[in-house]
Image (cartoon, rainbow, N blue to C red; front, side):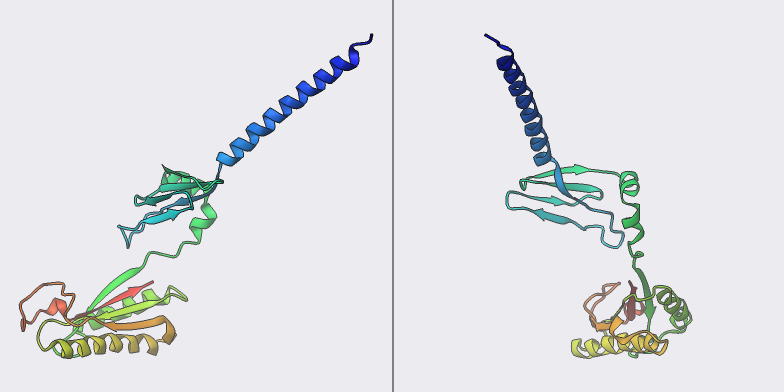
Length: 210
């Protein structure tokens, strides 16, 4: 009897089993490979930033710069860290698209008015020029007062101060929808004082150029 066909069949079966094991291993590795990664970059204007990554199976929080969360194909999560150098090498195009860090300026006012002090009036051109260099950017102006006067009066005055600065930006051609003015009254003093105490540093508008 010729046993070669049977031997040949066993060799083919053995070969197929080897392929099956290799494919099974490849599938297993593919299932373990991350389908997405989340990397928390440093936020200079928001040092306490964090990201919560959630799947149906798990949840993790990234709260340190260059922390990494990897999401597996089956929904599992794993945590890791990377470095600035590794991110720069892997994602140069994405990093180039990041907007510049927001800039903040403080302008001060004469007591009880929405008129800038002479020092702040001289600073205004630098603030506006900074904003002009950020085409399409947003500007937030937050007005403040000291604690002289009533809460209601100071709310009105702080908004008047913010709107006065906003008007200066609009006069320079900034789009109205990109310049927001809000008033915080006496609620957020730079220098805490008792009621009815004048404090020049609290009579201010904070300008955030983003």
